[in-house]
Length: 115
Length: 117
Image (cartoon, rainbow over all chains, first blue to last red; front, side, top):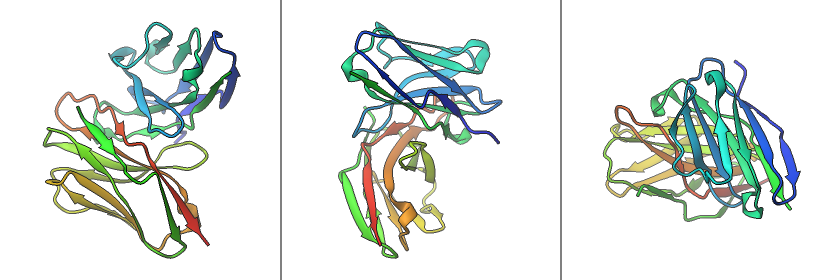
C-alpha cells in the first residue's frame, strides 16, 4: 500500500512570499489532516477534512492560511503572505474515517523555512 | 482543555538497556485513546503503541510496553533491550473516542531519545 505522499520535501521562501504544499493521501482514506510542527514542539492540527468538507479549522490562521481538498482526494495547503513564525514542518495525515478506531498514516512532511 | 505533557525533553540509554519515557495528560473524558509515536529524522510519524482507555490491561508491542495509570492520568512508555534504531523523537498523543468524534490527535512536546552503543 502506498503511503501518504507530500511535496515538496523542503521549501525556503522570503517573508511575505506565498507557498503551497501538496498532499496525496492513501487511496480510499476519507479523512485528511494537516498539522503544523514548530521546531521543539509536537504537531498541532491546522485543519481536518472529511471527504471534501472541512470538519475542523478552528486553529487555522485564516488571514494567511487556506486549504482545499478538491474531489475529496488530494489536498493543498497555502500560506500567503508567509511570516517568519510560519517556519515549521507541515505534516499531512490520512485515515479511513474520523476517530482513532481507523488509525492514522502520516506523510514525511514539508519543512518550510521563512527567511 | 485537553493537554498532553512530556516532562523529559531528552533521555539517553545504553544499547540493550531499558528506558522509560513519561507522559501525563489532562482530560475530563472517560473514553479515549493514547498513543506513542516515533519520529526519526525522516520526519514521518510512526505508531509505536496504542492504548484504549477502557482497557485495563497495558498494551505491549514486542520490546515496547506502556504503564497506563488512568486515575493518575499517566501513560509511560518502556523500551526494553534498546537498539540503535530506537533513537528518535518520541511523542505521546491523545484523542477522545465517542460517536462522532473527529479523531484529532493532541500531541505532547516530545522526548528526544539517544541510544549509546
